[in-house]
Length: 468
Image 1 (cartoon, rainbow, N blue to C red):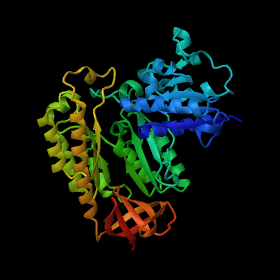
Image 2 (tube, rainbow, N blue to C red; image 1 turned 90 degrees about the vertical axis):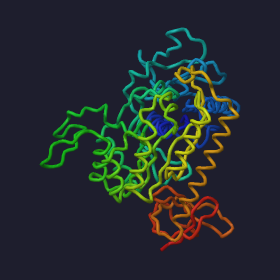
Image 3 (spheres, rainbow, N blue to C red; image 1 turned 90 degrees about the horizontal axis):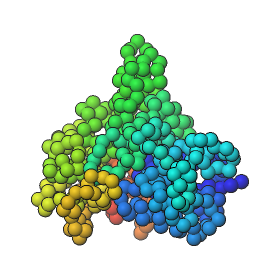
């Protein structure tokens, strides 16, 4: 029986797409291979958020072709949607499937599919494009949403990630994602509840919900549906509630027995007072807020076409910290955006220093073809951007260390992940606290268990604790 292997690149949304592809390929009768070396079909599910992501995908194509020359190499994902002809021309590529056709990928590549009909005629055949077959169409006409839980390869028995939203209706000047993932699309609330209940039944105790623009969940769904409609939230004797992320979370809390819900990245303007209060007050929601910042400079945010100003952002973070004094608060920050001056960078550095961040994801700007920012003047020299990146990473490390040290002598809740070999003090189990800190617990402990732990010290970038 033919075997398949899916290799994912990039963000959680891509990982989630890969999990859904694995479901589809298995449904077509293919068996999962343990590595690309033994698979007859190798699917490379690509990212294109930076030029480095494109390079990683091309390197993977060369590696698979060298190690398994008989394999059919199928390239899909965001890079495939953005530059299909470029990929199709690469030696070893058998077929290119854009995000627009990703939901049909298993049928396209499966030997069982037989006649595929007009919708499966490759674009390269229709337009005489040289190279491998390309399946591609207008991503903005795309309404499908692949949904399947994805599991961290290192911690498969804990913390599955469920993508409930895809695409983006914003047009940040630096971002290629809307052009490769299309308009915002939401997984219907009934499906979300079904998926969460399935995970709970399988024994999972924490689930992470995520999306490309998670705060926009539900805005594309029909808010007029009520009285049992697919996305109405109706308690006995009540009128239907609006289809909002806040009400979806309430449904998860009321209609599932999930022990802990973690919410991934949400844009600052979507952290409503209601959402902050809900996360703060519910013991079943992890105290964790990831709020993309990008820049602390007002002029930079305007050039980025971001929908908030620095003072708006500062207010949101301060509200979150006031409501949740021990919460993890993280942000995405970009350095080296075209035209970023020393003063604008210093505004970003100062805002980070002032605000109670516990971790940061710092990125250096990478020009993406087709985006407005790529056409802007005054691109920041690479050596300056790299130095700014270093400064912010060091600042982030200092803030994270101070946050970790603030828990010495305190009690925390953490979920066990896995036994991680041994260190100088002997074998230990890695855990993750509710507020997103790694904690080392001495000895071997079964994974996927919530434990109350005493924090003794901070060593090698992690908390060290013991059972109460």
